[in-house]
Amino acid sequence: MSLDSAISFYVEGIAFELTHPKEISSWLTTIAVENNASLSQIEYIFCSDEYLLDINKQYLNHDYYTDIITFPMKTDPVEATIFISIDRIREQAIEYKATFLDELHRVVVHGLLHLIGFNDKTEEEQDLMTLQEDACLEKRDFV
Image (cartoon, helix red, strand yellow):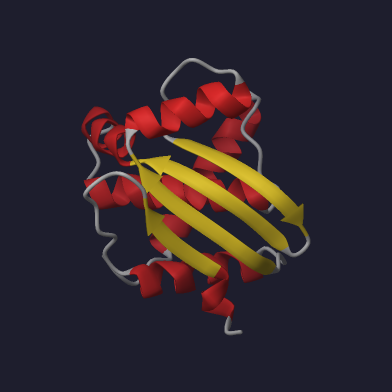
C-alpha cells in the first residue's frame, strides 16, 4: 500500500467533484509524516448541510449545522471517517473572504490536524490550530 492510498475521497448526495485529489492526498500524508503520525485509512466524505446535520443529530445529539465532523476509529495508525459539508465551505469562504478551494483545504487539513493531536477547545488551542492550518496551506504545491 502506498502512503497516499491511506486517504480516500467520496461524495454523498451532492454534485461535487474534488480537484487535485492525488495532490491533496500527498499533501495530507506529508503533513501527517511531518507530525510523526502514521496513517492507516482516512475517508473524507463530502456532503450537503442537511446530510451532515442528520449525522450531527443522530450521532452527536447536536441540532446545528457544522462544516466538519470527524469520527476517529484508531489513533496509531490513524483511521477515521471525516464528513465535510460543501454548503458550509461555500458560505464560510464568502464569510472569511477566502476562495472556495482555500476554505475547503483549510477544513480538510483541520480534520487531519485533530486526528494527529491538535485540539481547538480553548482560545489558546484555537490560535495554535489556526497557525497550523496556515502553515499547512503554505505547503500546498497545487491549487
